[in-house]
Amino acid sequence: MLAFVNGLNDIIWSPALVFLCLGVGLYFSLRTRFMQVRHAREMIRLMFDGKASDAGVSSFQALAMSLSGRVGTGNIAGVAAAIAYGGPGAVFWMWMTAFLGAATAYIESTLAQIYKERNDGLFRGGPAYYIEKGLGWKAYAWVFALATVVSMGFLLPGVQANSIAAGLQNSLGIDTRISAAIIVVLLGLIVFGGVKRIARFAEIVVPFMALGYILVACVIVGLNISKLPAVISLIFSSAFGTDAAFGAMLGLAIQWGVKRGVFSNEAGQGSGPHPAAAAEVSHPAKQGIVQAFSIYVDTLLVCSATAFMILITGLYNVKGADGSMIMNALPNTPVGPAFTQAAVESVLPGFGSIFVAIALFFFAFTTIVAYYYIAETNIAYINRKVGRPWLVFLLKITILASCLYGAVRTADLAWTLGDIGVGVMAWLNIIAILFLQKPALDSLKDYEAQQKAGREPTFRTTPEALPNADLWAGED
Image (cartoon, rainbow, N blue to C red; front, top):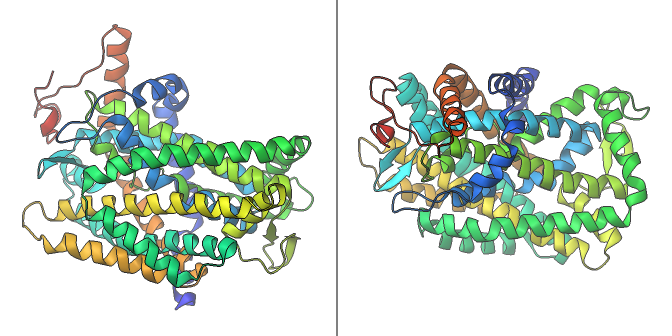
């Protein structure tokens, strides 16, 4: 089973997808004239712009929902895996994926806003919606919707549940079966509460957990500040193959950095557009700019916090391309949250391991909640013309079962299945946004023109100018 899954994962995550993610990010950065740099201040301002309505959530709630999906086990266990298999240089390529991916996130999130629709009184949108309405590729849209339901409802939740269970077992000795039961009960209370409860939950938990984690990382780095220049030098030298120990791992550094970067920040994967479409904003570009900021928070802040804690304490393992151990500071330690737990525990004994387990619980749990919302949105797409209410109930049962099973299965299988889900979605979504980029680019030009004229940007269009953007037709 594992051999087959690994073979399929190798095909999906071939070098073609790795360089496609980087190439598309660079392309959209150039097309938007590096909006992720030019609009850095605007990202902060727009975070708190707009209010929730009966149909939509506020910009901040949409950001929090998006971050709850992005900030998860990939920020702790995923960073550890990137270092273990790609060396310290993988961290640099995670940064590059985030910087370039912010422009990709702008494109996909703005498209989700343009082509969103009102479904059962709520704003819904995402790649399936903009693929059908913007490109007219209905069959392709269905393929994406089905792939997303399988990925978010079945493959990916197990990764998050597995990391929660592993973290609690490492720090507190809690049996994985008990962790699985706790996860299922808490998740059931949230997913049976509806979209508004998900938005409120994310709005409260996500900022708190991210800030606390970054503060602890600052303490770890501050207590080892003399080692920081050497760590930064190691990251850059390993990233470009000039380090004596890790020089031969250049290809693996790029591959694992991009793979874990996309898994963590989800730029181009097509998951971020779903909460972006739910926001109540006056101009589609506003939410696109806000979602670009979420990439920075996820990777440049939270992932970097993990990377610096691991590298500055020197508590990590690295396996070379030939299978030999280049770095083996934690013998017989499985790749995952244990690296981060060991790093923090070494500086803050009696606190570190438990803190990381708690942080991982909140990171991963909120991500599972976001996965459910994204899968439910695609079920809503499938149900638009023909009512199949039983599909939503089936999704809830499936995601609970996936968490139950994922918490007790092997980490290798969990991560590989998760990578397959991410990879399939990324292939489908990136191809779509390359064909459907013009409305998002035009939206940015319109937004900037209104700003230059001294007006608060608003958006309106006509069916002739922008077919199927029905909610924006004739608006002031």
